[in-house]
Amino acid sequence: MDDHRLLAQVHTHSLWLSAAAGGVGAGMPQPGTDEDVTDQRQPQVLLVEDNHINQVVALEFLALMGVQARLAKNGIEALAACEEAAPDLVLMDIQMPGMDGLECARRLRAQQRDGKMAAFPILALTAHALDADVAASMEAGMDEHLTKPLDFVALRTRLQRWLKLPQANN
Image (cartoon, rainbow, N blue to C red):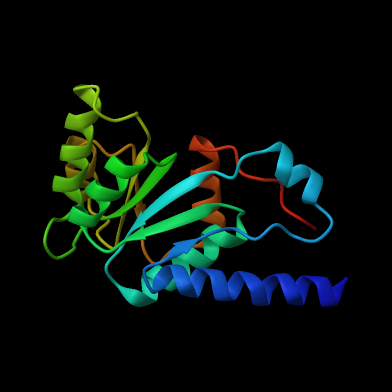
């Protein structure tokens, strides 16, 4: 059992690192749960984050939750990724170069209102936790406002409000 968990962790580790480098990350099915994984499609989450350390941490958390993750490094990349394939949920950093998360959320919501894109929740992900910051996120069209540093349990709890996450393997 310990060897299986170690192998799964090593394999998951390589997947989220490739995602942090700009590829597509995917949650690794854990040994002994192939039937459960085939019966349920993994949730698709777009992580929009420009900081490499935050990318690695968030992508690891998502992989451990059994979520498939794609990475966009700014709002411009996020718009393109959502136009290509609408995710089940977006985790959106607020401060990024090019186009920040607030403007990106506004544009995504406009496309959804115009019927050009499927609806999905957008969760702000930022170090800014003042009431004015939360209000700005909500005004831009975010569904929730999460603060950094990310906490695994808090992130999982928030994601479970919006997504059907695979069962934990214990």
